[in-house]
Image 1: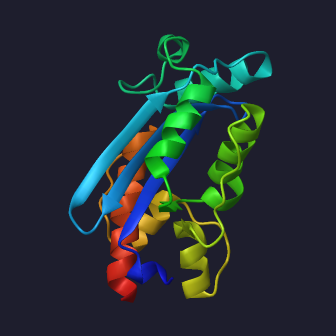
Image 2: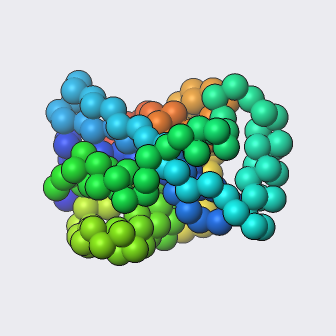
Length: 183
């Protein structure tokens, strides 16, 4: 199915702890043009070892801004197994949309499912990656940031949040603008 024809789908994003372990999953389920259901969980995957250094660097880079994920939030999060199980029930058989998800977020979800004995996620024909769509349309398969895509498609996303649900909302706005531009 062409991305411009997609009507029912889930837009999602992950945040990681500095060592490619999921600490947050955020998603929006779109059914038709107006119905949006939200999903958001913090995962108890605290950074350890060198990942703690990366996590502290990211936290500092975010300027310790309100809303950024804290270690306390992570420690009070739900298990990875429970988070992934809930996420997979939320996604169901829907197609998924995200930014730079094919080699990143989708692979992390699949690895987590396998690690937690939760089965496999069959994504064949169900992945719509805004970065790859843009590359295919423009004939330029180079990486492009979510912020640059927003600028290109004239979508005001404000300041980058680096929170999964907020980034999912930004990705949805960009995806809708892409659909409109290429319909």
